[in-house]
Image 1 (cartoon, protein in one colour):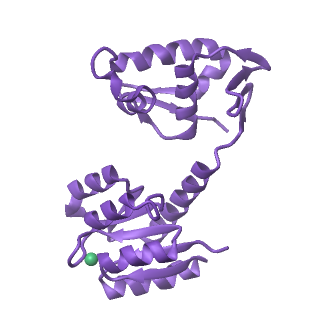
Image 2 (cartoon, protein in one colour; image 1 turned 60 degrees about the horizontal axis):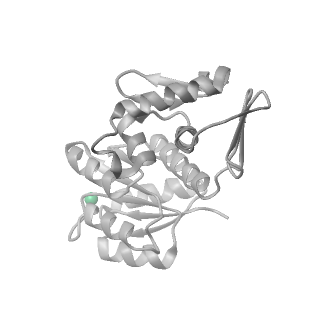
Image 3 (cartoon, protein in one colour; image 1 turned 30 degrees about the vertical axis):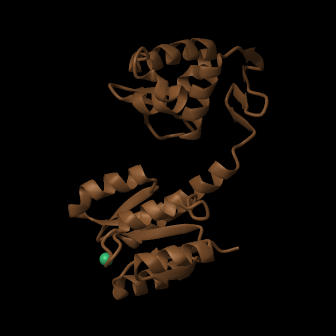
Length: 230
Ligand code: CA
């Protein structure tokens, strides 16, 4: 079935242009001109993705985003924000509110479509995590929480396994130490657990993974990334 996109935008010309081009790309399209209408449509139509303009009359885009994410019916629908260059800080707030990505106006259609497809792909992957992952000598069985390298079992602690899983799920994207701390150690890290903890765990994880450690790339002064060279 074709994926349905909800466009929330008050400028008629932009709606028309998006509608025409997204339909051409094979999507179904519904649109709303203001926030209230949008919230109503989002819960009735169950779109697969929402394109949200931040500059709207009445309820602004950020309020719409907050309302969408709060509602259980619409909270999991991915949101791409359409922002103006001058809305740098709004963009950050939007991402904090749970928006998945943003595109700066004026955007190229090709870029927008690529973003839409990437966000949709990530959304489906999130729904169905792979049971088994394999790359070279490394094999991870998520259901059994087991890791093998060259068919030999690797004994990981719970935190090490979580670390590996989190990096793998974000495959290709760099995750900061702070992000990893929040995700894996939660909020109890404020006092004694420092960002160095992540480095220490990465070090032991790498040691245990032996030659499969090459998939974990260090991004200096920032964090780590899981990368599989083709
Ligand atoms: Ca607008």
